[in-house]
Image (cartoon, rainbow, N blue to C red):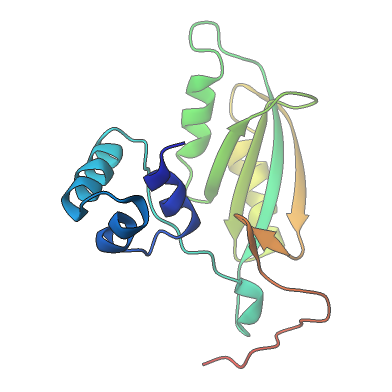
Length: 159
């Protein structure tokens, strides 16, 4: 993997000057390379990982939905993935091997809101043959970042 991509993957907040110092490149070279990666869709965005459990008034529920689908004759799984990605509730969509075809991560305000999304919007799609919804109760690690350790229950004061 390119050293700039690895550095950004580990810490996207670093400046071009800091990355240049780490790689031995000039700041302009780093900027040009990053611009190229963004233009080509290699870098698709920058993300902040938030430990939502640390907030007292979090009204966010996350679920993983396993979808079994019938691939479409001319477009296979691609058109189905695009249709599922179009819903605002959907955080991610992944094509899977194994017992189901897609893993869909969704967020909502309540368990019922997600259940209604699945029942009224996702399950009725033409290609969907079955769904299984699993709710995430607590996240311990996300994108390689430890969110909490044992015994850490809302350990920080809310600002």
